[in-house]
Image (cartoon, rainbow over all chains, first blue to last red; front, side, top):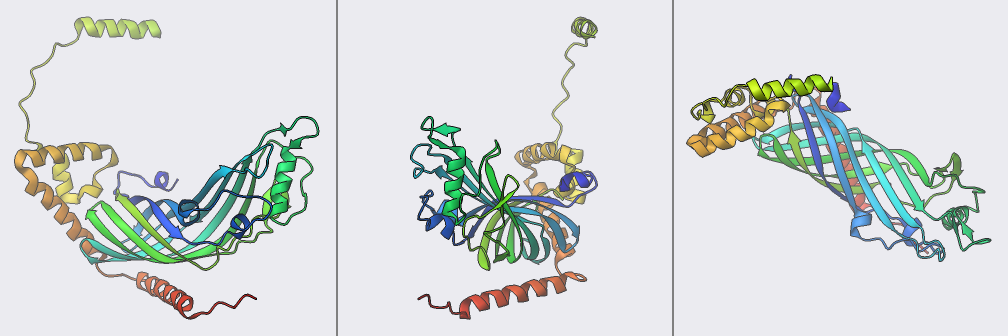
Length: 233
Length: 118
């Protein structure tokens, strides 16, 4: 959307970036869950954040933009013996950064980023309409088992076709980075900083109903990112 | 409409111009896009001409114009460095604020002690 707002012929100072981030949240709701054995967490699903972004340089030393850091998890919930639903989890930290910078050397830049975060967590269960014949487990049972594991007691009576639970929260982040330009329009950017999120496990939504979500600690955690930048100018 | 297009195609096949004599190979380094990049920088080349620029720059390098391409890059680095070598206006205040926030965050992380769990 940002790109379409500015004419591309008149030297727009636009850059796109793609990369990865690293952080270390505590996901007790998944890792220490006694009722549902979630897919075992590993470095890729717990610590890696996939990063895409776009920036517009509106001043000789400043940019604004959009940056999305996303953590994924995927696996089968074998604990649900009959249905064994497929479980997807995403945590998306959507940032709207204001970045100031200066060139230390012609090829080296130091940048300073402060950004609000609009975070969104999403859990999807791909379960079967009815497993085990008459009197068997239904989608509603699977979802209620999931909610029970997060500390909620059978909040759902019937499940419609929509099969995901969501939560939104706000936060902020600060980062300092160093960028090395291998070409005038191509650079590698390394950032270090922190993210602070106001996540609340009681503020998840499922089909318009307030439900409990997993216990996560994503407050005040260090974050690092490595990105490849392509500048159009 | 379809019939019209078919007739048009047929006419163009029957009465179109024959292959013209190819022009002698031009010097790729003299291409206007290279001149534009020399003057304004590669990042100023319009998006639709970027692929053309990269192709021409490659051909120019092969044709012995490596120095021309290097000069374009050097000019662009120098221009960017001149533009953002020092922080202007409010940007230094923003940078200092970010620096202070991060410094105190990491300091807190280093010196804070976690409460013992029973």
